[in-house]
Length: 449
Ligand code: F0G
Image 1 (tube, helix red, strand yellow):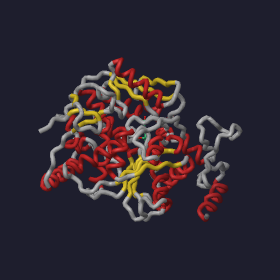
Image 2 (cartoon, helix red, strand yellow):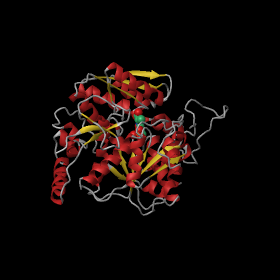
Image 3 (cartoon, helix red, strand yellow):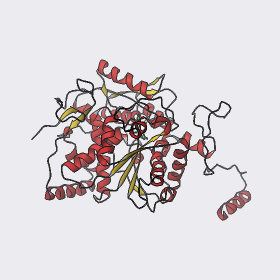
Image 4 (cartoon, protein in one colour):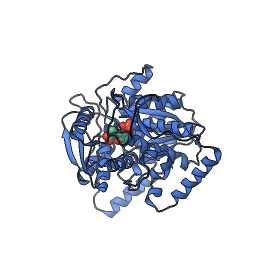
């Protein structure tokens, strides 16, 4: 049997590196992936494995309970699973979204809400595996650059593992909910002058030269854990693949991991049908979209601008892997405006779920792809809501007060900065006197409209 190893992405004949060698790129600078060399399973073996997953889902043992480690047959790099750091993560719900379905023009629409993870984002699925690997490798100190969620997740898991953590964040450009998490979990938090892309360049060099373990999604063990978002989704849908999975695109780690999950599941005979992957970017941070519409296999980095700060990324690390994911699955890349993101986010809220702005690109993208005829209105579609509503409360409150601007620092349009209109969908807080009669009269009026 071939051993699990690291290889340059997309080249099966490339030089392999041992799984326990700390490196993030091949000798010629390419990103790495874990070559799992999974065995092809026959029908009986597939059925037995599915039964085992069902049994584990009902267990209280933390490694079985985790929505990541439950599927450990697809994570052989971490065997014998003796350094697992788990909260436990995953087990995120799939919700129906009737309001959003009506909004996009479908009879039904689903959301897998990764914001229901322990630190409130999908990063936990990949952080449990990457921090477990850090522990296996004997790392004492870990680091990442982040638009906020990676840092929150890394700081949390590092604290649980008894490791020190360092986060590099673009100064003033991450949401407060996320900043508060890395501070509270004890990370050394370095606010860099510049954007995420600059922070990403610096952290890779700092880690290599400073002997610090890098936990951005360039770390292939992050991608391994995030594969289980798709495995768990299929499990929850009784192994019936949806037609489409829609995911926001920033640094493109998540879409890459979805592509790897489907490709491995298919190769080893676990699934027949591969859902199409639609990656949605914000118009102001759309390098993947631009290369996709130009049929280019080369990405042109750009300066990114969007109020969906989680995906304010102009030079995504995992471009090639994400392109594979889209092409392999027969999917697409789409872009949406600030306006479309804001309105879609308010619709997710009306379904009683809520999400942070970047996650709402999925619903906005779905509406656009239906209008273009790319997605059929009767298709089964799962939107991946990547982060919790509470991550970025400022955005939500500004929206509902009709004070949402495309530039985070502005409070007026005097400078020419655009206000993002709410299209009448804001839910302004009301001020009333502390008088029961007035309040009841107001409620009566509210109830009748
Ligand atoms: N949604 C949220 C809520 C995110 O935090 C991110 C990325 C994305 C989508 C995009 O995912 O990078 O895998 O394409 N946040 C990173 C961070 C970059 O530092 O927290 P991606």
